[in-house]
Image 1 (spheres, rainbow, N blue to C red):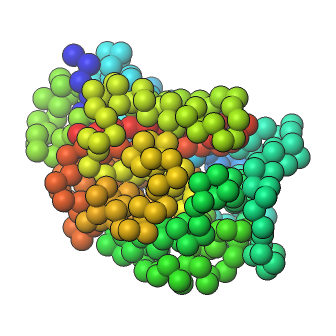
Image 2 (cartoon, helix red, strand yellow):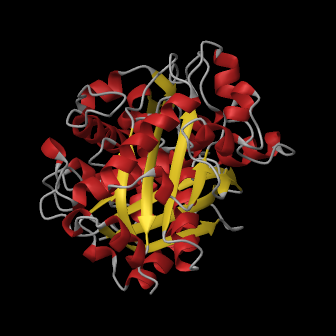
Length: 411
């Protein structure tokens, strides 16, 4: 009775869409997911609407989902607005799944929409400023940057152009990992090069240009050891999923070979820990719960989509998911093990670095990729024999890690 299925998924092209409104992207994703599920608006019994920055960018607060979905014709159903930093869309999915499990509905929509790109670059980059404790900004920055103490920063490796404060955060994470495990800048570049290569086979990716490792290293610096191709861009876009109970699936008469099961969905907040205490990392804790919920282990995963807001993020999260031992993800990437055709493909979509990162839609973009791969419909980026997929999506910063993490396993 607690089985939950995904009947349909959709994702708009991620990118810089100055000409598209939140309402327009909502309608695009909604129309596509209804078609994919063989569902009508009248059959949707509830909707979880994910968005983070529309209030900051446009002043639309409090009823974002009701406004955007009413414009698409979805009305007279519960609409729950979800905001949970970069984990917003996966949180919307998590809530939709549990709404089904609670018996509150049989057919539920989870949708994430974000319009971040703007000609007002100050407003655009300041959208990230509230994703940590705003009452302790100096302490936050000092704590996270000090994680990299002891790693020499070469001159000329920090950009004088505006960038998100979270790149400084990831630089601190990177330097700590470098001095703890011997991870090299070249290994971080190998992650970025892999993901950009994957994105050339994803028509919905914001960027579809391949990079070599040397090109990544030679690119414009952001903040050491990160260069521009190692970092996710500012993006617009939307993604959606329709989740169902067994009764809901029967009502939709969905094609069973395209319907996928939710094996686990876990939401986890971080905790107070030492920066180098990786065994208590929020993702690792969430992964332990997710594997137990699914009755599976790391070795059962066919592929993974992880939150690579930077290439270093992929290294941290792959190790936290126990898909590689601590300190081994960088070398594994250099050996090609994490590429399509390798031992465990990671971010076959191209990841946030090249697919894009519209923060309120990102987690459902990962769900879209998992379902597409499990259906065998990923074209040139298809993972061979994809049976079980895991997604990890993190958001915000509290202490020395993400404020919140979502881990989802589909099969």
